[in-house]
Image 1 (tube, each protein chain N blue to C red):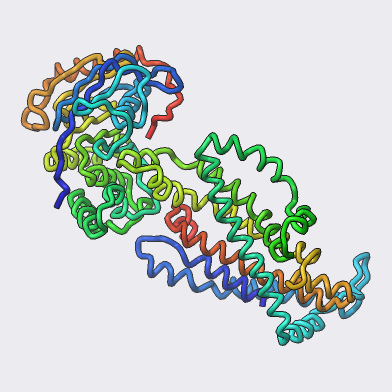
Image 2: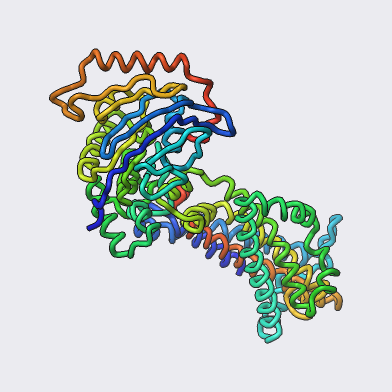
Length: 290
Length: 261
């Protein structure tokens, strides 16, 4: 399953390649070389085989595999899980939290990042605050979130959003500062207003720069949503994984981990794919494809 | 079509001192450009000719003196004064056509009109076939043709050109000069063209001025402008070259060139 997702992501990332005859290039990129496909599948299969051997023979060589569930057990537990409605409820809950948190962080991070980069006054007002808040790990905000927010749900979304916010903010600020001034000058000499410069040059121009921040943001958002769910949730993949641990149900713990891995990769894949789609015009995109 | 609805602007510098962070790059420039004229400003790099163009375009506030266009002081950039940059001023995420549409989009013209005007301009600069290419998929010469089309599409009264052909090879450069002359004839706008190439100046100009650190050093009116059958006399060329080399010895240390396009 993981291989399948990885596959889809890799295929997807090769689609959006620019070139004078775009249709042909896209068609070629869509098909992955069978040899590479084989290597990727084999790599994953080998890892599972090693896991299987280590657990079947209860290997104890400093690391102890005698109590770790093997792939067979985990697969069986997985099948049990995916036939329950609760599994999908947990999945949906985690996805809802991460997507709403990430959406809030993206809008706030990009918006504030642009304002801070373009207004010295706003930078003076907000910069010190943000610099102090930035080093605090979002997960350390759990107690504060519990105090501040009426519901657990809002607290978890707040923590997720805070985690994703800073990488997005920082990358946006840098992207705005790195914009060539000549683009803005060109628009100004066409009589553009501040707003037209913003929508015509700044927003499209920073897209390549902010997608790095969005990818990192999505990663830390997952870390924080799962941790927050483990601490204070009553639903969600993180909560379920921790529950399984407290009742010493190790196969279900691993089912939770695998689920988080797969869904996490799916969301980062979406961010990556969107980024590639929006930055087809980058010259390096064309070069990489050749 | 409204493409050629151009009223050429006059532009005038009065005791103009320009620079960055209070430090003058060029001082005491007095210059008068007549409507519909091609004025070429010659000078070595660092002499402040790009800076002068930025002031004409309204992107730079003078340290002293003022810029007047049609008798009114320039206080900021305007659609009436376009600027063509040396390179990379096209928005790389917009196709050639959508770059040319840009000044019309800024003016809020309807989409159909924008498209028609952009197509007409791309056709005029010989790029109709490449309208949907991104700038990154065009050669340097093609990109400058798109820039020229983009600058003129907004029907400005004045086009400031900052060494627009400086990065091109000799042959492309020469064909670009002819293209500029042809489009200028159709449009009728005023052109202030900056270069360090004397021959380019003589091909294009009605009038050539050599800019030094303390303003205009030499001014030369071409007798038969843009007429290949009446080339500029070698003595005049030598005179301009001499003035140019004289300014070089006076040229200041290269300032931190924020003005490089």
